[in-house]
Amino acid sequence: MNEQYDIIIIGAGVTGSAIARELSCFDCKVLVLEKDEDLCCGTSKANSGIVHAGYDAKPGTFKARMNLRGNQMMPSLCEELDIPFKQIGSLVVCTDESQRSGITELFERGISNGVPDMKILEADEVRELEPNISDDVVCALYAPTAGIICPFRLNIALAECANQNGVEFRFDCPVTSIESSASGFIVHSYDSVFECSVVVNCAGCHADEIHNMVSGNKLHITPRRGDYILLDRSCEGFVNHVIFPQPTKLGKGILVTPTVHGNILAGPTAIDNDSRDEAPLTSEGIAKVLEGTAKNVKGLPVKQVITGFSGLRAHEDGGEFILEEVSDCPGFFDCVGIESPGLTACPAIGEYMARLIADKLSLSLKAFWNSECKDIVKPFELSDEERSALISSHPEYGKIICRCETITEGEIIDAVKRPLGARSLDGVKRRTRAGMGRCQGGFCSPRVMEIISRELGVPLDTVTKNGGSSKILTGRTKDES
Image 1 (cartoon, rainbow, N blue to C red):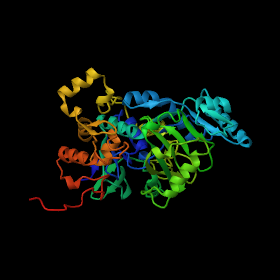
Image 2 (cartoon, rainbow, N blue to C red; image 1 turned 180 degrees about the horizontal axis):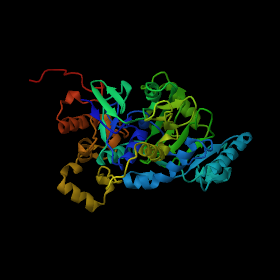
Image 3 (tube, rainbow, N blue to C red; image 1 turned 90 degrees about the horizontal axis):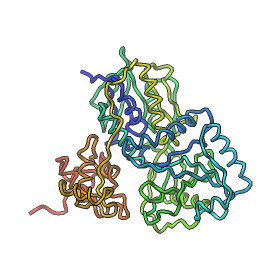
Image 4 (tube, rainbow, N blue to C red; image 1 turned 180 degrees about the vertical axis):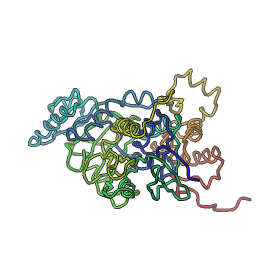
């Protein structure tokens, strides 16, 4: 017999997880299907981690509305989810006097969108805020409500909160087909079949494929690759705000920003990609990042680069968020084209879509709903007394596994054993930062693998980097005696 649900959400990225959390406050049965082995494996895992102020999008669009509302929601949401958020402000830098009018246009657009407290700063004022700004700076748009966040922890916390309120998640469960039925939809995934009244399409770069399974009004998404470089935490303070160039039709351009963990991040490029799943970092991409940063800051300490990475953005041909019930397929809801500012907008999208779906199904609120979620305990963020007491009762929190990031065995165990826990090296990394430091897991990866193997009760040679065929160990060099 097919498994029965009220609502199936396709995709466990930040948008799908935000919608799942909002729906978890209603009396309904919700399932999230994710094609990858964990949360935050697609577009949500590789982005700038910026909470945008909201001046960039065209007034009246979903991008503009959801950006502003998401920015307003983010401080209280992060407090509820126990994740870091820093409202450090952003600067859009003009380095050519002939382009000054573009800064004025952005300012006026921000006013139309409802962005508060913006200012246009002159060159000396910008240099006072950012000593490493380009010598060519003419002026800049300052937006103090912009901020930075950890995209991994936001995605994971949204999903964990949804899960603790009754939402089910299935991983390694790609949707292969969808059929209409008398009661709604039949959703197929390999050997599993599910029935539901409502489907919510949050499939990122695959969202057009999912939409086109049920609708005659076809959509098309272009995967757009973004390359980044990450600098060591020794560079903390190189910039103190998010530094943007003036935007182009391809996006907001190559930014330089602090991260919530003290690194400096630069990127992304904007390169149309053939694959919807793979976005390999290239030397050309890194060169474009370095070239772009040089236009807005001077002296970027490139010798402190510890890694590079790339991610994909789901660019729909219309360039707008599509957030609606599909006109020729009642009960099927699209969240398509969620590119930047999608991370900022996700709580607002969750709120908006949950209301549409609740009205569609005439859902009632639960008697009890817990909006809060606690992050993994981090011993080195505690006071000396609190840390000593924790280690006394749980000695594993006194055993450091990742020296670069000072991550303990207790944190890794928690990452694996908590609901929706990690099953791979990357899963542990996203939850704890083990392997994200200067050595990039060169020392701690074998030990993390041993902990995953032990806590999950699986053979060591089955532990993967990120699921699927990404095994770390392929065999023994010699037999055990």
